[in-house]
Length: 111
Image 1 (spheres, rainbow, N blue to C red):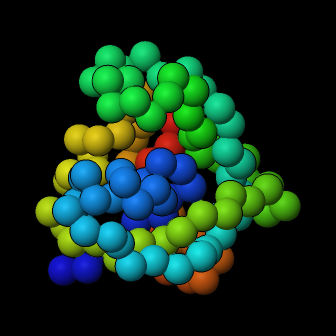
Image 2 (cartoon, rainbow, N blue to C red):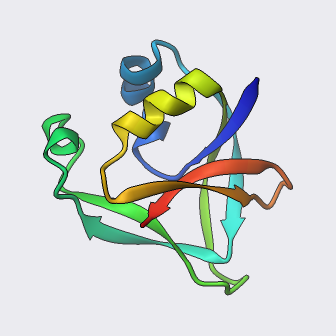
């Protein structure tokens, strides 16, 4: 079954996709309204060991339709979604959201 995953950060990088999924993902540009991206410090040592940086963007809900995060919505399998769960830092959670395109997608955001 195909799932949608919205990325606004490291999952958009070809090197991360190849390492995590063994392939480049198929995706399209999209936008998430009512959220903004903030920068947080990552303390998850497993994530930091991957070399993606101590400071990462995180989606924060604002409920203001003028706020938006631009990113890419990718088509992934359920199994690939579980790989992404293991990749993301411990202080991120996965939630289902609706994008500007109308697609319902998973996103990683602040706990």
